[in-house]
Length: 104
Image 1 (tube, rainbow, N blue to C red):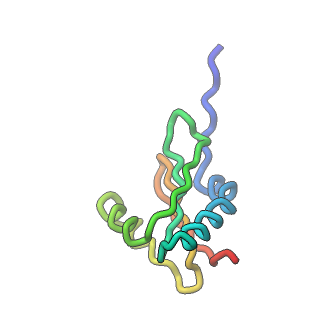
Image 2: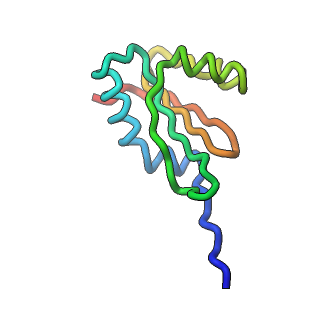
Image 3: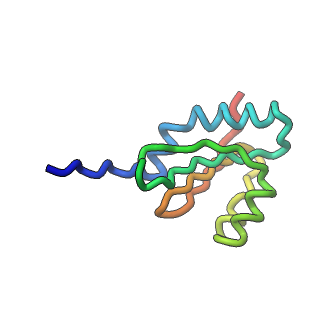
C-alpha cells in the first residue's frame, strides 16, 4: 500500500491560512526598518506541499528579481494608494499578488 500524496494547497487557501502571519511579518519588517516591505508566502517544496515560508523583502528588490523571471508580476507589485500591504504567494503553479489595507 502506498501513501497518498498530500494535496498541494492553492494560493487562495495559503493566503487564507497565513493571512495573520503575513500581517505580523509586515509589521515586524517595518519595526526592523524596512521602508516598503512585501511579504512572500513561498510554498515551493514538492516534498512538503503544506510547508509555507514567510519572507519579508523590500518591494524594489523583489521587483528587480521578478522583472527577470516574470515581468508581468513585477508590474503588479505596485499597490493601490489605500492598500500598502502586499502579499505575494508563490507556488509551483505560479504567482498570485494581493494588496491589502495595512493592519493596525
